[in-house]
Structure formats: structure tokens, C-alpha cells
Amino acid sequence: MKFDKPTQNFWGGYWREIKNGRSFEVFNPASGEVCARVAEASRDDVQSAIDAAAVAGESWAGLAHTKRAGFLLKAADIMEERRQDFVDALVQEGGSWVGKAMFETAYSIEALRAAAAMVFHMNGEILPSEYGKLSMAVREPLGVVSVISPWNFPLLLTVRGFAVAMAIGNTIVLKPSEESPLSGGLLLAEVLEAAGLPAGVFNVVTCSRDGISGLGDELVVNPAVRGISFTGSTEVGRHIATLAGSLLKKACVELGGKDALIILDDADLGKAVNAATFGTYMHQGQICMSVERIIVHEAVADEFTRRLVANVKTLGVGDPASMDHVIGPLINEKQLENVHGQVTEAIEKGATLLTGGKFRDLFYEPTVLSGVTRDMKIFREETFGPVAALITVDDAEEAIAVANDSDYGLSAGIFTADEQHGMEVARRLETGMAHINDSSVNDEAHAPFGGVKNSGQGRQNGKASVEAFSELRWITLERGGRQYPPPFNEKI
Ligand code: NAD
Image 1: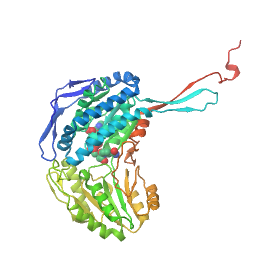
Image 2: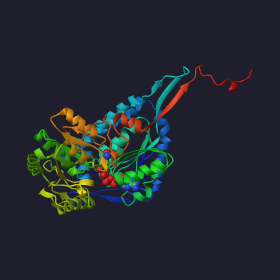
Image 3: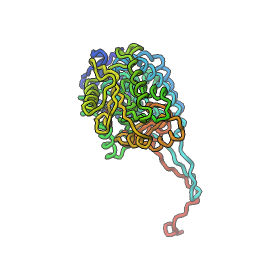
Image 4: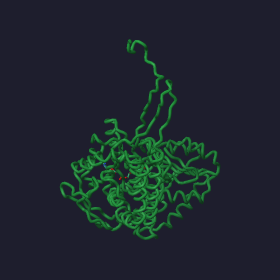
């Protein structure tokens, strides 16, 4: 992985030495080796980056919308040329299976192009006016938007966090995850620099987990920051949203999940097994909308379980740089402890281990547990690991009740041959998203993405991002029809 600026961050159009000259190590979770060194920014550096974004704001927002779109399209072309650098970074610092890294890179390029098109959707409205005025609702960018992104889909979720916001005239200060600073930010800065983006429009600061307490709040409380795009855990997202709310700033927070996949008695079991396997094990289960609970009708539970276990046993585990190893490492020790702790507790409380349950270094075997009950941590807390947790129910009513018994509400999947019934079930699930005859893992660059309950607040992608990162203003032009009460008028 090529990166030769271990003490530099990017703001105001230049790579700058950070103030204290310090750096931190980024580890490859598959090998445990250091794969990069990047800058450990301080609060002063973050302030400088925000200042640069604020200075750039007016001219960027004032630029013709087609010109702004042009920079995003150019960046997409450059990313395409540098596709392999992104794939390498995703595999090395993120532990991504190479197939996932290729998909994520290609999809992020597509998302940049989709974001460019959103410049044509900063639409307002002409309103009827009581007085015959020209009355308009117009959209304007917020100003500086802070983007804080996670490590699990670092490239895509960073692009989702900033691209539409930037296209419609905001300027950006990005802080990628400490686990994935290259694929989540620094490589994007190189791309946008090469695209000739005006100075200060896109800025990146990096810091370690230890360093975040000193500068994280600055990304929210700095008076120049008017919007926040956060993707990450519920715990940190709540802190960010609370801080932003106290200052009356707009914050879109995309958080954790505990998604259910419901398999009803008339489901196509072949499709359901494939969706369950993909949804549970893609990227070792480290996706916000991973299938974390499989709720299966008792009439098909035995057959579904047998076929799922057989399929799971075919998944290759090992170095994710190989196409054969769809299961790579978990991101770090903390995640490993969380996953194994939940599996162990579930078994102690009566769940049956059907396969997996063991690990070597950070590689956790794809695991299936049946007989999961509501008193287990694995039922309630985000696992973020390659574990299928099976719960058997008597009917669709119970399936809905079990699925809704969660503090989270991100996405869901429902398998049934009866499309009408599938729609009814989908409407009753307390989630931001629901997919009939598909996995809960779904995303398209123009579709409103987001959760309810502890899974977040606000929506991203396409028009939803335009709404999230713009202000709707009312502007009128009076043309002689407005009369004030006579006592207020000039007496001539
Ligand atoms: P995290 O909350 O630990 O970190 C997310 C980002 O916040 C990182 O950049 C981190 O450095 C930063 N951060 C941490 N503390 C901060 C603070 N005090 N102030 C400012 N920034 C701070 O999450 P993670 O471990 O990187 O990601 C995994 C979590 O993200 C999971 O819970 C997953 O479900 C969630 N996630 C949600 C979505 C979604 O769209 N809903 C997508 C991906 C991941």
C-alpha cells in the first residue's frame, strides 16, 4: 500500500505538516503487521481545516452547478484509474475480502457520479401567494459539513457522507476512521486534489482512537460547522447528535443495527438460504445492516437450518486477498472479544452451536446458533461478526413481534411467496428500510438510506442527502398586492 505522507493532512488545497509532527500506526488485521503510518492531528489542525473549508465556502457555492458536478465526475474518472490502490487499501487496512473491496470501489465510483447528478436536484418550489407575490421556497447549502466515517465500508460510507453534500455547494472536513484512514479519506484527498478541486472544498484530518477525545467535538462545535454527517456506532452517534442538537445544528447520524431476516412458511428456501448466507457473512458480518437475527417459521425451520449450515460450511476462511477466502479477519481484538463473548453467553444460556464458534488470531469461523432467545445478548446487542442467530416462531404475527423487539431499527428482509402478505409484514416492521424476498443488506445510490430507533436519525443518498445538507428558505418578491392595515401607512 503506497502512502508517503505520515505526518501530513490535507486542507486548503495542500498537504500540510500537522502541528505536532506525530503519526500513528495502521494495522493489517489479517497479518497483524503495520501497513501504514498516518498523521495524528490535533485540535489546532482541525480548526485550520475548518477555517479552510469556511473560506472556500462562498466561491464554491457560487460556482455554476455544472462546474461543481464536473469536479465529481473528474474525481470518479481518476478513481477508476487508481482502482487497484483503493482495492489494496481496503484489503490491507480493512480486512476486506478482495471481492468486497472490488465491489466497494466500483460502487463508490458510481456513487460519485450519482452525486454529481444531484446538482440538478437542488430544486425549490414556486408557492401560491395570497398577495400575488412571487413566492419561492429555495434550497441553499448549509456551509461547512463535517463528515465522520466508519471502517467497515470506509470508502463507500465516506463517499456517501460527503459527495452529495459537496456537489450541492457545501465544503467538507472529513475525519475517517482510525482503522481505515487511507481508503476512508487520505486516498480520496489525493484523487480530489488531482481532479483540480478548488482549495478548501475538501479537507481531511486523521487521528488515532486515543487522539479523538481531543478533537472530535471540534468537528461539531466549531461555529463554522453547520452540518454533520456521521456514520458509526450508536454510542458515538448519540454523543454527536446530542452535541449538535444542543447547538441547533443539523446532524444526520447513521448508526448500528440488529436486523432481522424473516423466513415465512411459504418462502422459497433456496433463495432464503442464499440471502441469509450473504446477509450474515458478507464482510464477516461487519455491516450495519447485516442479518443479525434469522426468524424462521417452525414449519420450515428444520429444512432451512440444515441447508443453511451446509452452505455456511462451504465459506472459505483466510487471507482476504485471495478470492477463495470470502471470510477474512475481524477488524480488531475488541470486536473479536465482543463476538466470542456473545456466542459463549448464548451457548451458556441454552443456544445450540451448529457450526463454527472458534477462532484463530482475528479469523472467526462462520458460526450458526439455533435456539436463540430474547434474554441473550446475541438477540439484543449488535454482534458485528459472522454469526447466524436462529429463532423459531409459530407464525407471522410472532415473527413481527420478535423482529420489533429491538432497540434498533435499520433494515429487514422478509421471505414469502405471497407478495401482498410480504408488503403487509414490511409495513409493520419498525425499521427505516425493509426488503421483501431479499436480504436486509441493500443500498442504491439514490434510495433513502437510514434507520429508526437507535439506528439513527436522518436519511442519506440522492434526494435525501440534498434535504439533509441544505436549508430550505422562503423568498418572496412583492409586486404591489400586499396591503398593510391603514394606520401603518404614510399619511399624505
Ligand atoms: P465508531 O462509532 O466507533 O466510529 C465511527 C467514527 O467516529 C470513526 O471515524 C471514529 O474515529 C469516530 N469517533 C469515535 N469517537 C468519536 C468522538 N468522540 N467524536 C467524534 N468522532 C468520534 O464506529 P465504527 O466502529 O467505526 O463502525 C462500526 C459501527 O458503525 C457499527 O455500529 C455499525 O453498525 C455502524 N455503521 C452504521 C452504518 C449505517 O449506515 N447505519 C454504516 C456502517 C457502520
